[in-house]
Length: 111
Image 1 (cartoon, rainbow, N blue to C red):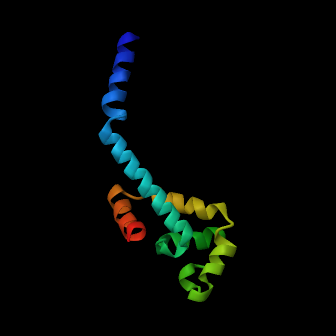
Image 2: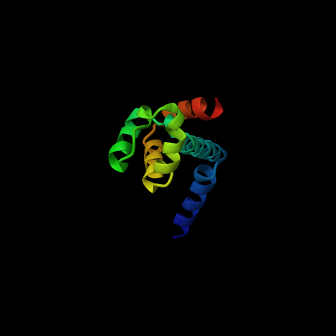
């Protein structure tokens, strides 16, 4: 048991709570949170594949087919009130590779 505790302390000190891991963890949190917020704020930023799934699953209009002047109303009335909308965003972000998420974050959030 003593050796297990020593090993656990070592792992936490030199790996799990290390400066390098903490730094990457902080970056990952910023990227994931930033992407989620960007997509929730402006659903038109979602790729066509996600919008097609939302159209089928929620029975909403595909945002690519809504006239630009009516997009915000469509999102406010038919998307934001549905938990499935937010789940689709989370699923989309969760399916991203690290490099794709970083590129999207630089494009959508940092600008």
